[in-house]
Image 1 (tube, helix red, strand yellow):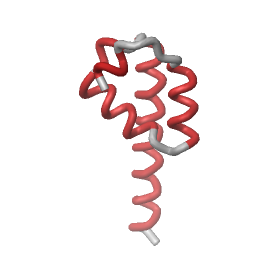
Image 2: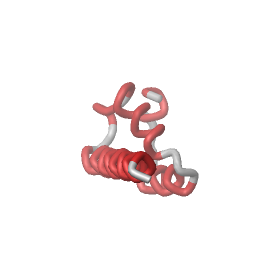
Image 3: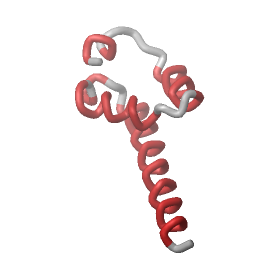
Length: 68
């Protein structure tokens, strides 16, 4: 991941592609662990916010199922 992040990346395209395939949380986890210092802050924030929204949505779904 680090080697990839050191290259010229279209971060907007990567984000959209990750969203389309529902893997933003996986991509963000790898970026955070291996290359967070190499990614422009505004793009890292975008991945992080989507990751956090996904966590909140999953917790809400879990809560709904437990209360059914």
